[in-house]
Image (tube, rainbow, N blue to C red; front, side, top):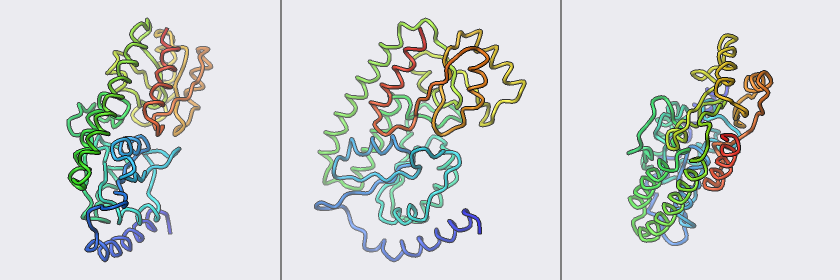
Length: 283
């Protein structure tokens, strides 16, 4: 029996179990934490920044896993039955496209929040969290969802949300200032995660991966030529994907392969680290 069949069977069992307990679910009170499901690790930080100790964020896609291929475990499906909110990325993440309807069926009382509502979406690009400006919109949407489910803590959520928005505004200004003086505005990455970041800060992203696939031999020749033309000295990779093609190009042009993680949990610190990596490259 393969994993997908097993998960579907377990999903049916969870739905039955959830139906038995949904009638007893109540609005959070006292010290009970409001459980919020999120797809990726950075979203957990957003939830916790707003909700503080009133909320508990549970991440579906664990660190190191690919948002393209990951399948939820039986334990994760069980956790869904207690959740009040699913803060969906809503921007076309492959995991959500495959699993969100199934997840909704586990707990029909769970509020689904589309955190991308109001974001200017780039077609076929789900990576909205890599733009601090888009994250500010996501934070507003998460806040509205928390208040809808738990209005008694509205003032706390509002205060925390406003403080986090100020920190995101400061981050945006810092990134803009750091990159403003860069002469080279082009950078190369293996997986095309950074288009929203590039859009915000007037950069050009060159992706090694083409439409989700490793480049062909002909593509590699073109990428090497493009890298030379754009004075690429670093190719950025991320832990969730192979680095082989990036390394081949780097070896051909005398560049370095540098890891950056788009899925770090401490969002502001991670984006500062990423910005430092870009700044040292785009001289």
